[in-house]
Image (cartoon, rainbow, N blue to C red):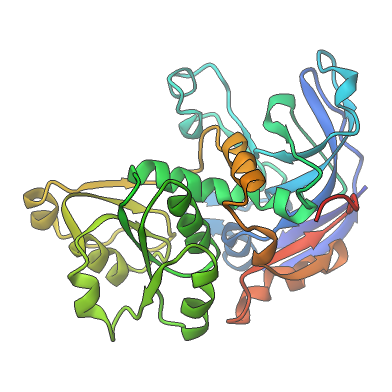
Length: 341
């Protein structure tokens, strides 16, 4: 099979590799579409994300859809032919985190495109059968792949504790900011305020759940006076985190999603005096079924987020698509099924 491989920092090479064989309890999936994630770009440009370091050739990509073409022992043959979206986590299922329902925090996790585990910029991948979720024929390959970043949005909304009528402040109008905005609206948030420096991004995100947008500096006083129920940072910028915490009402919740500095100053006295809950997001738990249901109802728009599509031979271009300020989401089209909107 073809595999697009990060052979060294900034260098992608198309290689031939053996087709993997599904183990017991696994399915073999012919890859259809793969979304480009910010983590893929970090590995491509920097060769690492925090303690995760690329030390050998690595296949990137973890936002993936495809079609089941073979099954391992213990998986019904009837699954062959299913169109699926894959939850890219392979937890151990034995540790305390897994057994307590927090498999995303499994210390033994194997995750697509996280060193040393290969990802999905290739023709075929294997996955645990219960992590390959069947999608309806009304869902395109691209939309099915984008259930992964939408899952980040859903988990952020869950961690924020969003309830009907809430006001939510989101920093960053990029792809994840748009996913969070759609997720909190789906949970009933009435006022979704998104901040970003780029005019075109602020304008665009009103199509993806934002009820209004603000400039982080020009509208700083308005941001500070929001008294938001929840704040979700999707920027990774220290000033955005500090101002977002300051914009919370007493008892509000701040959720950190963006990848920024490893250490940043936090207004501790404010957190203490307002009893603010400060938490993070690391992947997700059991979000695919909810994401599929929300797509069916029309509550989430995923296809509309795709601004560029590339074949497998042009993965390097896809990884550099974010240099265009008009880019929202790049998708690598590998083996399209031709099904869906």
